[in-house]
Each structure stands twice: as C-alpha cells, then as structure tokens.
Length: 350
Image (spheres, helix red, strand yellow):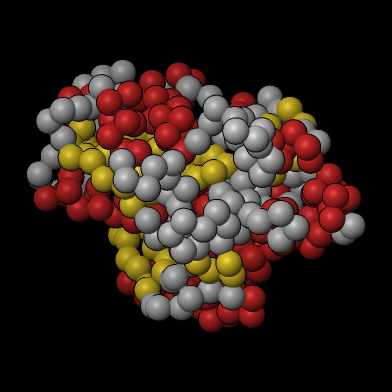
C-alpha cells in the first residue's frame, strides 16, 4: 500500500517587523544582524492569534482543497508546536472540532522543538498505512519566543501548515521516511519560563548540521540517490544561513532550495518551518517532481522524507485556498512598540 499527502494548507500572520526596527531599540545594527542571519523581516502574530488559530486556519485551507473528503473519515489530528497556548488542554481537539472531525477520532499535541510537525506526519503515515484509519492530519505551527534583546528576537516568528495524510487521491507520495536522534541540549525552555535558552556553540555543531547531514545521508543510502536526483529540497530554517550552508554541503544547488526557503521573508516559524517550506514547493510542483525534506528539532533530532509528486496534483484544487505566494503578498509593518504589545512583552497593569 502507498501513502502520502492528500492535501495541505498554510497560514502565516500578515504582520511583519524589520531587523533594523528591533536593533535600534537595543543599540544594535539590526540591518547587519538581519543580513548575517539572512532574514529580511519576520512575521508577528496579532494579539488574537496563537497556535490554535494558526493551526485552524491552516487546517481549514487544507480541507478546502479536498471537498470530496468527509471530515468524519479523519481518524487522528496531531498538532506539533513548542508554543501551545495551554499547559494542560490540547490544541489538537480544538482544531479537530473546527474542521468537524470529532468525535470518533483521536487527537494529541506533540512537542519536539522545531520538528514536532514532521513527527506528526510520520505518525499519521504509520496509522494510515496500518489501515487503522482512512486519513490523519499532521500540523506544525508556532508563535515562537525570543527574549527582548536576544539574538532569537530577530528570527522567532509565527506560522504553520497542515497536512492530510492518506492512501487515496495522493498528490505527493512519501516514498520513505527515517530519523536521526540524539540527546544534544543545544536549545531548551523549562516549564513556566517565557523564553528559551540556547547553548551557543552547540547550536551549529554538533546540533543542527550533524543531525541534518546524518539524516540526509541515511536517506541517500536507503534510496540509492544523491542531491541531483531531486527537483526540490527543503531543510529546517532557523535562519536563512544554516539551510543554505547545509544544502551546499549535501550537494544541492540554490535553485533546488530557493522555492522552499521562506525564512528570509517570514523568519523562523519553528515547528512550522519545514511544513511551510514544503507547502510552498507543492504550490508549484508538477507530476514526477521529487522532493527531499529534512527537518530539525533541538534536543535533538531530524526527520527525513523522500517524496514524489503524483499525477493527482494536476487535478488538485490549489486555487481553493491561498498559496504561499498569495499569503506573502498582504503584509503590515509594525514598529517595536506595536510588536512588543502584540507579543505580550508589555501589558497593561491589572
């Protein structure tokens, strides 16, 4: 039995802030900081937006593209995030209710830093391949955190994408998935703490680059492929610099990664980063296109996917929901005061 992506949907808040706007508050050359990170601007959620609303928008866009799918045939909804609004109460049940998949189904929230969304895709794939359910939904979404004045403040953003996984009407077949996982504490946030901490010199090596290259090489070996066998590739994007560098290390060209490289335009959406990048690729993909995907989550692990676009994409109703190009058109720029208010960094006294 074959399985893969039946539909997908994306959502990114329309608000943006520029690196120089952040930098001038802290006496830093924000423009140079943004250039160094290869981030031109980042998305900011409105005060009434959180992981629930972002995941719901993405899931509704996903369902709009497959009007023939009965929501009652969805057996599972998984939402991966590191910024769930509730410590005790799932995001996934709210999203499942919003797309009318309840009550005869299962739901759960997932956490694994920035790869919780791709972990959900793996779980969904296993469930539909086992025959336990017809469809499963995996969502990666975040309203990521960065402490005032910290380097993360220039990149931490908001957005998410949803994927309907099944065995019928598959627009992109998942040929294989595998993972590479270790205990590498490069980035963490303890319960109750508003902002994460990062392990400085561990962030690149042995964290991001070791895990992504290891998972990628495992996939090359498993599939008997190399970089030039793929039309597109997307890697986790904590900034624009890391995925560009790791792609070159693995033999991919700029042309192969440019479509899925969204961080320069929206910042680091954490759990939403790879799902959003893949959605941008699927917006333009043609039958037969082959896609290489590797996520990364601090803590640490990477999930790799080998995907082939099928003939079903030709009749897939992309136009029923906003494509990534459309989502990125409508933006509103904030100053730092508005940004701080929207992110809850400043609040009215009780």
